[in-house]
Image (tube, rainbow, N blue to C red):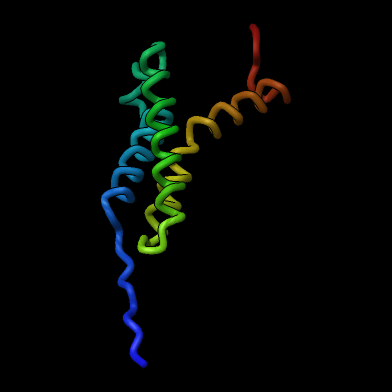
Length: 101
């Protein structure tokens, strides 16, 4: 009895999720995207790209024909805005970051 082994590879979903994750990471920590963070529409675009990256990464992780490394990286990078806001909130509450002058 001969079984065929299905070849796992990266699909377009993996690369799009990774691109969205890199956009999220660079908009949070990149100095060249500093203007992007200060506006309402910039925050809206950042939130939508983060949510889309999370959904695509999660959907790709449930597929059996996908390699998982890029999807895990994209998932972590898509969580960057939420982790940044959590770190700022913890910094405010513990006093590491001064809240008012």
